[in-house]
Structure formats: structure tokens, C-alpha cells
Length: 300
Image (cartoon, rainbow, N blue to C red):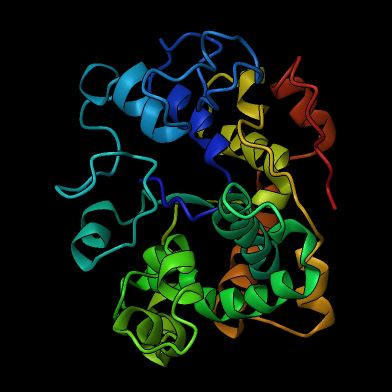
């Protein structure tokens, strides 16, 4: 069950797909549509939608390549969807959840860059040069994104936190007075103490926890824990971000933190490094396990 948080590493889907079906072509990976990641054919998109959706729906259809393997729902049939964990999901997949986690400031910076700056820049060319305007909305976006991972893990929220981030431009930016329900619910509903407690408890039941900022090491750890062939293509970054500004520094300099997701990330980090030690994941062992990857298996 792939618990896929926004901006935490869609590329990890390649590792999961190859592990789930060892007969996949060696270069199969989450496509970027650009034809630049590895093999031009494998990086192309059948329907113009990059990432896991194109991979599991068009390139390697679920019913042919991965029947009854991945976590899906009646409302969302894509394994790589950004999907909160509901009670029924957790009961069915408990002990089988895997996911990558990222520091809240880094995740928010990347999400803001992707969902707001990159999309608006297509319509408003002057936006990227208006630093004060960017930072004003970054502060508001961080408020909207506060507790997103906690809500996704617990399944407890008034409005889907994923939609709050994805629709920030329409729901928040265009409603400057925050008069409508979507804006109010997105901005004013932090996770409850019960939601945080449940999220932390569910995290403990994950079978695998990786860290986005240690992506290469996370892939190596996955194979150390579960086996399977480690292919060089698993380390390809299918969607590199082009940052217009250093949003993480702004968040840090202005002490804009997430007390909820911060706790989740700290616990995920403890679990990750504990497993790195337990499974003797070292730079040398990773190089032997994943030959030809040109990956950076840094231990700090």
C-alpha cells in the first residue's frame, strides 16, 4: 500500500513496481513525458499525464501487470494517488503501508513551487519576479498545508487537505477575504490532538518508511529489507523541480513551522535511521546491492 504524500517522491513508484512485478522492462519507471530521464520510449507518456497515473493506467495497466497487488479504492484506482488513509483502508492494509516522508518546510516549499508558482507563471509572467507577492502567498500556503500529512495519515479532516493545496490558487488566492467555505475550512482547521495521536500510531504500523531527502539511501534500504533486484532506473528523478526562489529558507528565517507534521517527520526519521542500522545499510553495501546506479548513498 503506497502512501504517497504530495512532493515526497513519485519516482519511488519505480521501486515498488519492479518489486511487485519482476518481469517489467528494466527501464520501466514513472514517466515524465519529457523523454529525458532514461530511455525515450519508457519516459514518454501514453496520455500526456506524467507520473504514476500514466504508468499504471496506460503504460503498464493494473489489471495486466499488477492484479490485486496495490492499494486502490472504488473512488481512486491508481496506486500512486495522493490518498488519505480511511479506517477501512488501514484495517485492510495494516502492516503493509510504505511511504517516503519529508521535512514539512521542504515539502511545503516544493508544493508551493509546484502547485502555485509554476502554474501561475504560465498565466502571469510577472509573478516570478514579484518577490514580496510570492512570499505573502507562501506564508498563506504554509498555513493551508499545516497538518496535511497528519490529516492524510489519520483520515480525520473537514475538507480533503490534498484538495486545499491543489486548488490553492482558486480557493485561497482568488478569495482574498476568505468568504467562502473552502477557504475557511482549508485555513482554519488544524488537526485535532486525536488526529495527531492516531497518525503517529498508524505510522508505527508501516512496513517501510523512507526519507525523500535521502532518496537513494531509502531505495537501498527498501531492497535490504525486502530483497528484489535493484535497478539503476529506480534512482532516476522523473520530475526535477525548478525553484524560482529558496522558499525553504524563507520559512525557516520566519520561523514558519508545522507542529503537527513536524512530529510525524521526526518519528519517521527515527524509524528510518533505526532500520538503516538494523539492516546494516552502508554506502559500501548499497554500492554492492545497486551496481551501476551512480547513486549517492550518503549516511548523513
